[in-house]
Image (cartoon, rainbow, N blue to C red; front, side):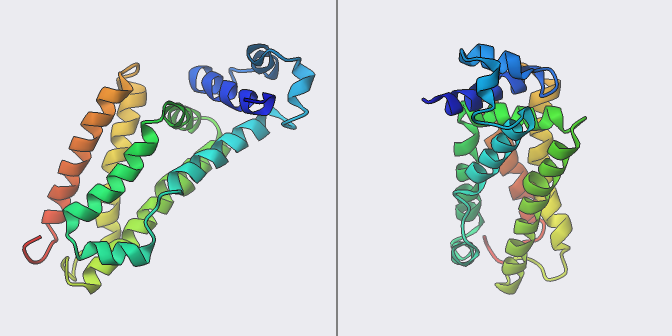
Length: 205
């Protein structure tokens, strides 16, 4: 691991523990074992380190996204198949310790850091909801769900419960064992999704 990678990793550790404003460049350098001035050989500012962390996070989260064309085919295999494919991809990322720490960082910083709040809203909340809207419209076209259902409300109902569980984990129940939480997260979100889907489905899926 080179110094830039060390700076990146140490910053994740410190930011997720103390918050962005609670960590100095000097502290990061000290943990890495380099001079403070050496940080600027790799990053122009502490904000640039945070930006790199955010870019890494969204890159990892979308790397296994199922293309819409493939998703359309998967819909014919039933809701269980499609939902499990999506949830497995999502949880495989969150199971990585680094990704859990960045997720906690995002939630913590969203309360007082405008840039992080905008990132969280656009990339972590709005984008997935819009993706679900597209997929539920595909389900409508294939007569898998009722034509009269509100796909935006349906999408938000699907997605927001998982976000609540993450907030609960990182704030109300912190510190809580991440592995135990993720196991319960999978069960709860799947049960919730099934309940919502059953209310609008057509046929015997």
